[in-house]
Length: 115
Length: 109
Image 1 (cartoon, chains in turn red, green):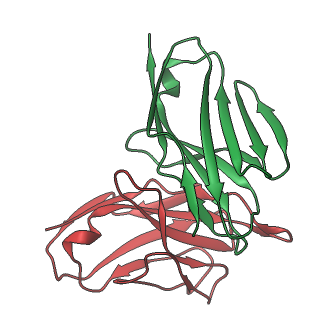
Image 2 (tube, each protein chain N blue to C red; image 1 turned 135 degrees about the vertical axis):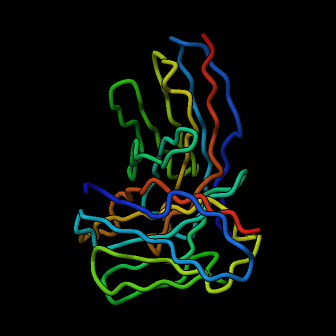
């Protein structure tokens, strides 16, 4: 693999179900991010991780959790999905340089529909 | 609060030039990014400005004025494949990106 991969590509989920979106990068980037993108709105940050073992909350973290056990993987879990979580989810990664966070590179996205 | 404003949609003709404007208000500032996003695809990086002035990359150029909280993306010699959404994002003092909603650019033959 090269770059960032996400799985699944798309998913239809019943409300109340638990779901994990997977994200893997092979660029050895320190930082990783989860965004959601909704029509008419900018990308909104859900959670981020600046390095393996650490995570932080973004703008819209409620209903989502993440873990960062190693450099490459950054899964996003919806504990109990609700229809308002219907969205396109993008995972991104960037390298952390001495002057701050570098350019973010995006995975292909997961289209999630919660019914 | 933090805010990014850019036009929702623009239309231009193949072969012409188009300028997409972006204004931003952030808590601190660590640079301005432009991304391109084709329908159904992921955003891809176009440019980064942190100092005032114009950065040119082939047919695409990006300008920044920090004092005015203003940037623009200039696309020259437009091609049909340039039909896409263009996302403006400002990096705040915490090195988080604040994103605009994107400008959908429609290219007509």
